[in-house]
Image (cartoon, rainbow, N blue to C red):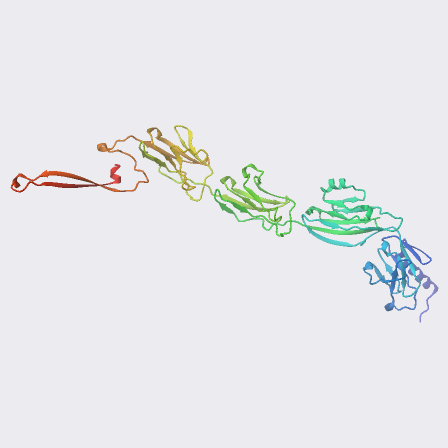
Length: 479
């Protein structure tokens, strides 16, 4: 068996001493009492040289307490912080004030460990947290101090290289973060941070620091609104209809910080052209950003854009099919005292123009319109939305002239009306047959009396009647 030289023994001793100092940097030991600061590490030597590694047990109690010892290896307070080495020593990392106590290996002499200062609960821990926009998150930062010590040099490091500390007052916090941040009172040792009404810009790494050697980190992810679609199928509607323009987040739990609908200008009840015609659903369902527009007009036609958080958007093309005027005869002849209908209508019976007006060119003034409906001789027919025809009653010769039907200030149709006096043959009245009168056949019966011929004088005197039938139709009557 090889014999160790003196130099080898000295080298081994220096190595072991350095190894021990690695775990006890900053700690002091005097008569089985070891004093350390929070956040440091310590190595406790097992002085039971006869113990086997598989049988060794490290236990502890509070100082001056000998009852109810706990197994250091199994106690959750030491999870991921303790280790038994091959020489049976116990190392404890990231010391806290709560680690103060009496330790022993099997039944050897007690070692008293005293931690003086302030320690951070769950030091060096890292936690990943996920929240939805609009929700709140609580980031725990609890500090415990030993006797004669008060919390000092405590701060929060925030994303974007910002930080707040125990001297930051609530007014300053409100100004910086619009009232979303709230830090608990330092007198209780609770420096936890509450962030409310989260938005995507607040995600990132948050860490609570004490004395620059203890910290606890939180990686915060804020799930925002991802739109279900960026391009929607075109919508086609008629004036007076309603339309639902869809826009929603994929995740029904998400709540965007902001969104808006635009079509040239912003679409809302605050905008004059849309006032009292717009309804949105986000107040009851935050992820539903759809837009309902009622009582559509041709002016509502265009591309509507739903924009979320000033970043992503979805588009919908809306077509509002307006009135295209039909072609009608442009000349009518009628007669005094009668009624006449000047035709004007939309090609599609589903269309309903926003505005219609009739003018007589000679007068250059509006006779009647949808906003000026006169109950006198001039009336717009209302039997269907697309029928814009004008009915004039009790015609006079002065009513003759050029009439113009104009729709939405864009399209127009002109009709020339001639009102002529009676000039029928044999005194009959010349007039235009009313449109509503049915075709009838009339018969005239004429009675002719005559006496019997002279050559038949010998017979009794008889009187004979001849019946002559004249047949004509209603059309003949008005020719």
